[in-house]
Length: 456
Image (cartoon, rainbow, N blue to C red; front, top):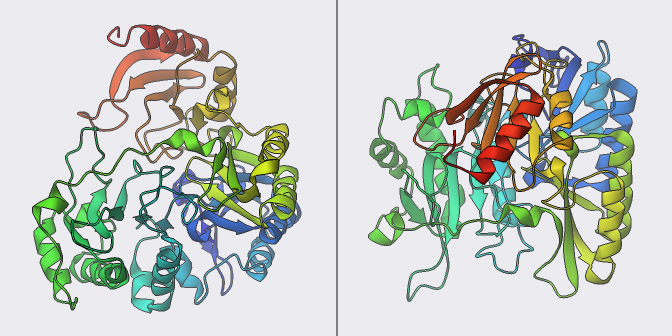
């Protein structure tokens, strides 16, 4: 687990003696629990609920990197909280400093999607082991992140990463898929505008050594103020980085036209809701989204109980601030879905709380200009049909959404927002289409723009 983003108060993380860190915020300390591939055992979920009740506020956030975050850690209880979490196996396998580098995203349905090109679960475990076993990598920024995509239909491919790897079909005559990779962004998606392309491709058994070579190259070339791959690319172009990395590899990078022309098929984020068949006969997964990314400890315990009884004792947190219960007997999947819905989680893409996300807001973050959580609750009650992917943010940091949302409400004052429409030709949230709206006015504007998209 790693302490949450320190910018909520502008304070540096404070260290618990010999352990990990807690970050201060308006509503108390914040501690992030990094989950390998988003996976969480039911017993670990119960341990988190117990620790949150005893040492924090009982508010648990699901993050857009498929992790959990505990809010309201009480002063003086930081070491006890971290000790409880480490005892449940919710930390790095080696030195505590290795926790910072465990930033690898995979699909919540990895190893279970019948249409995926490659099962990334073992490969992801090998990458995480590499990251935690080489002390040199502890110098990486806690925000330096990678994605490993097996071609699953349910995948967050719009979330920018410092290095991304995506499975691509085998070329004619080859036996195995390859992994395309690129830097500082997202993979090119079929049918979507993109200014990026894969830089090269490698065989699956070459992914781990390629990760090692790229990370060593980054650390060797980057200056102290260059913490992300996008920073390094302002000094060195991708060709120089690849040439440097190639010196540490015993195989050539594949860079033919089939790689640079490759486009990943579009993912289907709606598959995070409801029940869907897995690759193994008679099994399904059940997916849902937490309202505004938060649950309480009672909800987490009940999810753990459902998982223990019906999902092999596992849960998977998703990059959409939701959960997936895997390996459910298809015959009982409707009952499991009903139990999850009864907890207040959104189980359909039509649910208003499936269409709205919000940052911590002014109750938890000193930089926020509005109580975005409360405003998002109000917006959900009057949200027009057919309008989705709306992000309320208290400032330009856009903490709740790593991807560029279709609509962004950027706070200007308490209860007052500017409305932006996604425009990939512009930086930030896109094109501003209305200024200084109340929540009710924003709902009206969204309804009007949904009916007539060219009407600003």
